[in-house]
Image (cartoon, rainbow, N blue to C red; front, side, top):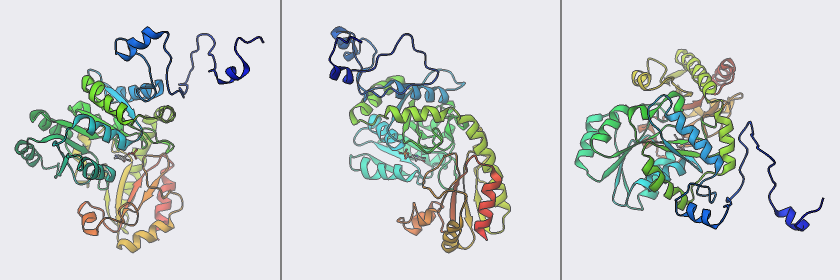
Amino acid sequence: MKEKIKFGSLCVKKEKFKGDIRPHQMPLYATSSFEFDNINQGIDIFTGKEKGLVYGRYANPNTSAVAEKIARMEMFGLKGEASALLTSSGMSAISTLMMGILNQGDKILTQGNLYGGTTEFFLKTLGRLGIETIFTDLQNLEKVDDIIKKDKKIKAIYFETPANPTLACVDMEALAKIAKKRKIKSIIDNTFPTPYLQQPFKYNVDFIIHSTTKYLNGHGNSIAGVIVGRDKELMETKVWQTLKLAGTNASPFEAWILGNGMKTLEVRMDRHCENAQAIAEYLEKNKKVKKVNYNGLVSHPDHELAKKQMKGFGGMLSFELKGGLKKGIKFMNKIKFCSLAPTLGDVDTLILHPASSSHINVAKELREKNGITDGLIRLSVGIENSQDIIADLEQAML
Ligand SMILES: *Cc1c(COP(=O)(O)O)cnc(C)c1O
């Protein structure tokens, strides 16, 4: 075939798509930039006159398409729209949002039992930048309102429900109401429940973040996060600008994997809930178990609240073995079927002993204040046949 360009140039030039391509599944746009038709169009896009793709750090078809789908999930059945941005991790969703909406001198009000990385980021990074974090019991609504009323520097309230490791819940509706009354922003980490089981926008929470690494992807093969907000203006200005300039965007490949994983979210979550309920009930009856924390058990102190604001109780649970640290380590060493891995939300069952792993460097006193006792075991219940999970737990307790 006669070519107009040299061989070496042909090697370098991009492949040409033929005709009107309608892929059944999302193709991967592995490109760092996008072409303009002509210089004028380039100018219009750069000045914001025309919407268009420019550079992969600003936006990419894969990251935008997946983010938009998550926004639709969070808004499912609700009035209005939301904007979403896909980030390089759950932590970068948190850091991008907080840096995007807060200023030096502002303060954050939150709970003591947050995801460990979030607490560290608030204290070690935001703290150094002059943004202080105040920890309080967010279940005590009167106190929360009082603290915000008295301290005008508090500009955001940040919460997780249900939270690690005791699955303690906070009242989203009440907290969002206080935030609106006091004119501050409310932010939730909705990683554990996912938009299928819990829709914070229904209760007027301002921003939702996820570590999509967990349940949204579900297969443990990508790290990404998302920020979802109903204030389109703020999302498209300050928040997007922070993402673009801090470079916290997700890669198209991670977005592509996530898009694939999200397709089965509903069926996975239904099975996670069903299995976790069966295992929690089994554990509650077991004489070697001191205590079980699962929102689906009537014995859980937040059972009613979880029932009110969640469609199902999720796949996370924790339990305390009789016999403390020694028994906990012995139990973990006997586990065969479940995986010992420090993540959650995957299709297979993951088991963690916080006192000997994730919290080994945390002072025992501090640990126990947040419910992480020596014998506590955390389970991220998978979607296997629950009988196999129960059999593994049973043999490990012998
Ligand atoms: C894992 C996790 C994060 C952090 O997400 P990464 O994707 O690991 O950065 C934040 N919040 C919760 C609740 C998590 O489980």
